[in-house]
Image (cartoon, rainbow, N blue to C red; front, side, top):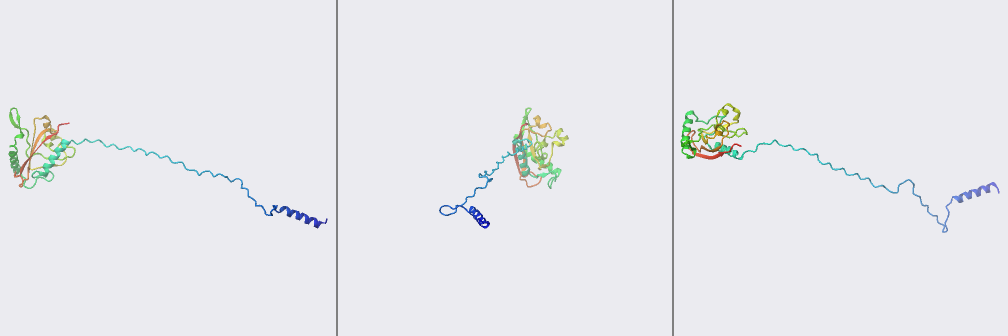
Length: 233
């Protein structure tokens, strides 16, 4: 066998081995690709973040207000009576601005006499003392009505003008207001009503003019207000 023939047979054999094997029906079987190794077949579940725990709100301490004294409802009535009197009485004026036009010492004295004459006709202001009739207490052209500033014990504290009040200006504070005149009667036999602290107790009668038309002339109605100062706590 010559060299050329031998080369041809080897080449033919090589080509025959590279061709796919045919099945009986002459078709070429398909080749199934094997899955690549190293790729996970199971996908891990997606990581779900754990819920952040809810923090309880930090307790903020509530500021405790400074305790204040509860207003005495009985004393509140006394302040209301004084305010009403200043709104109704003849010739009310503030101490800052002085009396109204027409004021004079003589006019004031005459007005006080007229006012007292009318008040003295009321039997309730008299009290049996030591077997005879005596006025409880009278204040004619009453001292100033005090302001309700939380310090003054009552609007008529100036009616208790004993040494402590006269020497201690801190007992009386705030603005003061006057009427042309008023009369306040109360029980002057009670020790609490004459100790100079400005605190009054017991039953009281208040008189003042309403509806006057002429300054320092008692030509209006004499109004009477009966009330009771609350007891000392």
